[in-house]
Image (cartoon, rainbow, N blue to C red; front, side, top):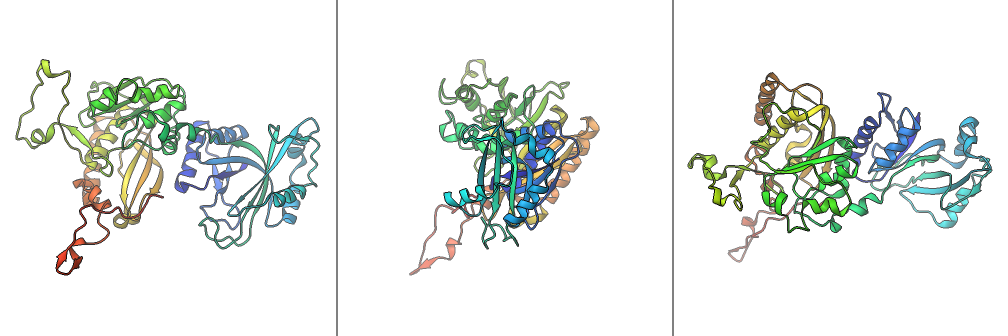
Length: 474
């Protein structure tokens, strides 16, 4: 069955991957296909999607963050005369069950790229009198919702290229999104926050990409203040997290302001466990494998926060031997840590996921991209156990973006696979940009907008002590 899928006009690169992930979660087979309306750009909010049942379309719309609604299309056209012909040619066997006298209905008018007055909306609704509605109008709680949607034909349509002719759609609402979710979980009302707390909308998108659901165990190895796990728990998953900073996972800002209180705030089940753990030297038993259904994380890649691993600078350099903390000092001891480069962090993450994810489990994580240096040639991390199924880019400035990678485990973990992954990692490290290995992405992103050493006034050189952030968030 073909449905009209209407998206919210934001995070354009994330829209289709989210629907595809949710379709798999709700049991969709290989029949999912996409098709654009005539004369529409790929970034249009209107798309046709083929799904095997109306129930799956309804479930996707209800769970999705970026889908505005799913509709059974009764007609479309470039003008209202064409729309009338299209609706009248739609089979009566599919229309009449929703037009009976014992049902109630409502017709809503929506537009993209333009605004209509109340009188204009009323006029368009009255033009649909040829549809044999027999039920009563109910504006608050109708049995059936119908939507008349119109795309503007102006030269500038919300930043999209102009279409040749406007397109008008009319259809029955099959499912709609619950947008109350985001205001409820917005960060500004969160009890416990840190500088790298994931935005609620993006956290829910990541949970959807990971197919978080009831009965699944989701793990975040860089849990921080728990924003990603809160979203996974909201969708019914059991959660577990770890972080190298014991003060974050154990102390927070007091007994009523910590990671646990974030779950308590929303009435969500607390995590199964929160561990103080170094992802570079994990404490898992040697025979422990395949226990997580999904791993979702935002690795520390050095823009807002740098990665850390156990050992301290002197120990990692070999100038001081490893030592044992005395028993009387262990209670308040904060372990020493040293720099943890992004390339090493990603390698450890893929190794962890290959070993600890169940078959067909999902790994969802962000990866940084310097757009002016990488362009379209950027190469993403690979692993023989995984298949890359989705790549969604979020542009944050003129020179920097982050890419959400979604991988599915398709092969079992073994010693041979580990060796093959090591070789792939070495090739990735050698072929990638210099900033990835050296960990200087922060200085690349926050370069001064001008060379202050060139600015001279009356034999004096003025230097800006703080680098300026080039570009702004989109």
